[in-house]
Image (cartoon, rainbow, N blue to C red; front, side, top):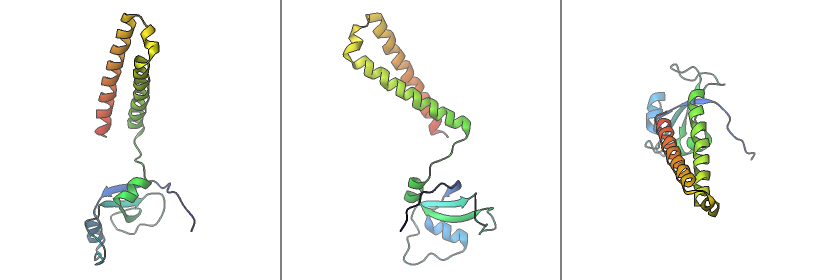
Amino acid sequence: MKKFKSHKEVTATPMNHLDYNVYRGWELPSDENGEDDGYLVEYLDGGESNHPDHKGYISWSPKRQFDEGYTRVLPDYQQRVVDEMNELADKTNKLMAFLKSEKSQELAAEDFKLMKDQWIAMGSYVFILSSRIDRF
């Protein structure tokens, strides 16, 4: 058997297996668990519509397989916030590593205090960006 990696762009709506079958007008097979978490997935870049309420082909995907196979696509303005937070978190971690190093002991006391204050401010900024991202 050959291996493949997904690169399709899809939309997804959380929906358990039973609800998906009801949505499609199907009976849930007796050997399947209707409470399985998953997603109604609509393929936007190929496949003919197989449901009157959708322009693309729809199917159901178990949550774990979907979560492992797809990455959420953010609008550009949201992705810029994620990128900014990642860059800032990296700089914040590097500054903390320096402050904990022996090299930092060579700084004048005022310089060390200013760098520590900078690290605190950067940490607050990371927290704010992270809170914004949680709301996406």
